Length: 362
Image 1 (cartoon, rainbow, N blue to C red):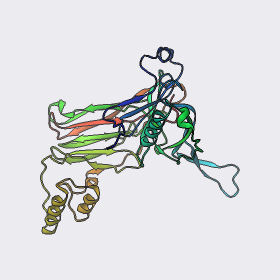
Image 2: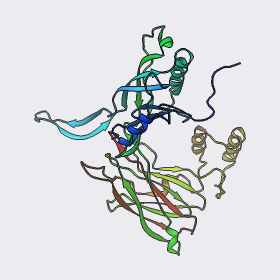
Image 3: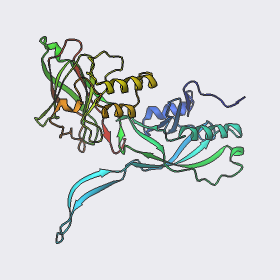
Image 4: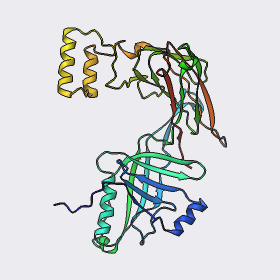
């Protein structure tokens, strides 16, 4: 029988809620609050700032040093054979490489082993945890991180006896940037009464990096989406009642992704006998829960949404973005023109979203 303590609810490690010293530090707002949320969010590690544990008195991990919060980057340059200097053509960020020095704080023996075990289990496999950084001025920003290097400590056999251990830890943030809460706005074009509506999706920019909006479009209708404030627009549709598509302006994602719920009734495509047989076999072996690889197989055999390849429904491409904040500039709102043609009241809509990104979280 296992004697390991099972985490069935959220467990928070750090300063006790009754810690008056921690409460006073929070009120002063001098230091950031740094926390790590495990992949399942069942473990919350308060590691830095007022809510971190008092070393030697409270259980947890204490962040003593860190580096790498600002992701490395490289510049793209051109230089002619006889050119003095270079001509810069762009800049790209690599993954963030975060190095931390943590101090384990726990009671001796089993308590020390438990805290170390939970910390290592937080990073198990290739899963991603959320490193959260809060300040009174900018609020919450986070970096999605995974373990980057193995534990290389020279452990002393007495560390569990003393309840003290210094633990260097390396993590990698694949996305490079610190993220925060999305700005979201909804446009219901059918409010115009005729099924045709013109208006705006208004998104707030809080990041220092250029913002690339994304849109969920709900059928029926044909959708016109402004290319930020460039004066150009991208048209998508027509789509059927119940269909939902994600329209992305991110370079690394497909422009159109079909996210229609599996249980939504939409008119079926006229299939050939071979396509019908393939669809039956796939549905039978997957219980109608078709994994991505089999979806690719379906598309190879020509089984797609009723309109065919969703990319055939889009006209033009996104090229512009929402600029990031410049020095000393506060958040600003961008009004992106959108419209719906042939929509239905209560069903057709556009939901726009923008994820702010920063190179530094405070």
